[in-house]
Length: 209
Image (cartoon, rainbow, N blue to C red; front, side, top):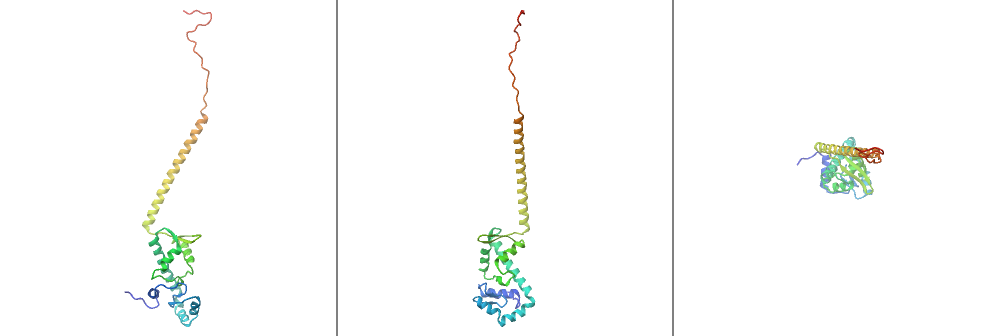
């Protein structure tokens, strides 16, 4: 099994895996320290050991946060695609499934403070379709696979052609109906009195040979 250097993101992540599931809110990723509650977490943040770690990681803080954020995003989206495909699903449901996995990364080590922040970011970046409902935020995975995109575009083109054909047919039928109405209005018939033929009847005062 490949070993990672001490202090690298993979090394820290592997250490977290070995610990199993932890309380997400009061975990210090940098020190790999789990606190029981908010009070303990605050005490840890002001401790000498934590301050030393801050100094050690200060020069590379952005790099670490960026790496952790990418790994968190990758894990979340991978789970979303694998379990739900392109279905619309509650973001928190996906998150609960994600943190139930042993090898997950803690969100407090990423650039996002809350799940809502993360979901909104996914929407802004076009990685997911997101919307807010009464019960919370929903996410829908956007499949960027070239074959899938090509298939979706082909389906969209066919649907557009079908819609255009239907609209043309409805327009044609509409014109025929209007033409029929106009013909009905212009169809005025002239009725004349029937005159009995007088052939073979003599005039008064004349003889018939």
